[in-house]
Image (cartoon, rainbow, N blue to C red; front, side, top):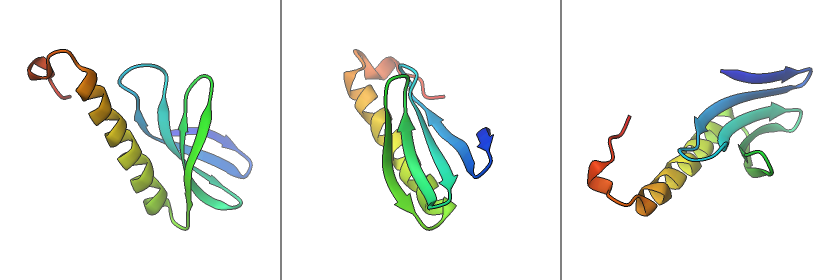
Length: 83
C-alpha cells in the first residue's frame, strides 16, 4: 500500500506495530531508498539503501525484532496466537 505520493516522495508500508501507532516503511526520495520507523511522536531513519529490496528487508527485520521484543513482554506466550 502506498501511504503518500508527494511529487518526488513515495512511501510504502512494510509492517505495523503490535502495540501503539508505530509503522515501518520504505521511503523513496531523491537520495534513494530509506527504511524508516515512524510513530505519532518520532520518525527514525533506520538506514539508506541503493535498492527497494534492501530497504524493505531492513524495515522487515526491524519490525520482526520489535515483534520478538513484544513477545518477551507477553505474560503467557503459550496463549499467543500468531496471525
